[in-house]
Structure formats: C-alpha cells, structure tokens
Image (tube, rainbow, N blue to C red; front, side, top):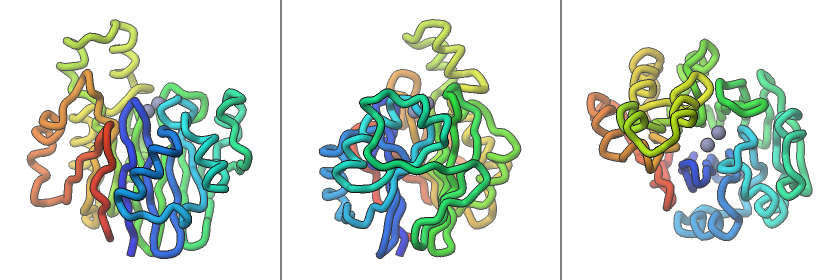
Length: 252
Ligand SMILES: [Zn+2]
Ligand SMILES: [Zn+2]
C-alpha cells in the first residue's frame, strides 16, 4: 500500500511524504526535524522507512530543515549539482548525492523522475515519483506550465499541485509591486486558475487524487481554492494541504 501526504505546504515550509510498506522518501525539507517527527507520529508514519530526501530548489521554505533531517534520519539529501553549489554552509547535509534531470533515481521500489521547472531559483526541478506502479507528482513553485510539465502531469494518478494565489487577491493585497510581479510571472507560482486549466487540459483519465498545495496565506484562501476547483468535485478526491499541520494521509 502506498501512503502519501503533505507534512507541510506553503511559503513557511514544504515537505511531502511518499512511501510504501518498505521504504519512503521525502520531497523537500522545509520544516525542522522536531516538527517533522511530530507530524509523522501524528499520522502513524514510521520515520525509519525514510531513505532519502530530494530537494527541488534552494529557497528556504524547501531546505531549512535539510541538515537536521539528514543527520537525524541518517539519510542523504539529493540535489541537482547546481542547487547544491548554492547552499549556505548551515544547510549542507552530512550526506548528499546528485540527481540529473531526465534520469530516474531509484531507491528500492521507488523511482524518482526529476525534470526542470519554471521558477526563479538557480536550477529548480519538479519530481514525478513512481512507486508500486503508481505515479505521484510533486508540483509546486512553478511559474508556468511548459511542455514537459504538461507531459509529466499527464502520467500521474495523484498530484501535489500548487494553487498558490488568487490573482485578484494578489494584485489587491499587501505585497510590494515587484513581489506581486514576481509571483504572477512565468518564474513565480501557479495561481488557482492556472492549476484548474492544467487539470482540465492535461489530466490523464487515471488521475484520481489532487492535493492543492503551497497555498498563500496573504493572497489566497482555502475557500477560494475550493471555489475554483468546484467543477472537479465528485470527479477527483481533493485533499487540501496546510501551512500549519499535516494533510490527510491518502492510501493508494
Ligand atoms: Zn516554495
Ligand atoms: Zn520557491
């Protein structure tokens, strides 16, 4: 049985758990070890199954827990070479390894397929994870949907998909203009509408589970996300993620 959940999701920290009976991986380490363990325990997930930690990009909400998590779980952080080269000393884990876009990285029964994404980091990647014949996408921090993203999305049965902002709230909100432009740009984040359009145009008929993710607390609300995705209710199992707590664990 495959188990997936968002241990944390948002600009205050991101970490996504994907595992089966034997092994598990984390995508991103945006929360510190103590919090991570509390949330794993709450969900009844066994931390000793976690074998590696894949890092999507160097923004702090994806790496601030990397050193402690790598050390205490005795697992490597796995990066693109360029992302690793940008890490500050305080974030460099004791063990590390490198992935390359387009080449699967296999850990036991889990294969991770990294591919480049559009975001304002040095070398940002998304991941599709294949485990026991199920494809799970971890797709956050993405400015626009390009060809490879649409193709990889189309292979997934379950996705963590960014619904970062409501365009009206963003442009009427508290951020400075240059940040609004950055968020809304093709190197920023996906809006609720962009996520909906991606699902409508590129979902495979096998897609069944969607975790709306990386939801802004200034420029979005859970209600707005669910309003925009309302037409999908009944067709998909939609599980909101949270900045404050672990999401529901979905078993596939
Ligand atoms: Zn982020
Ligand atoms: Zn980012």
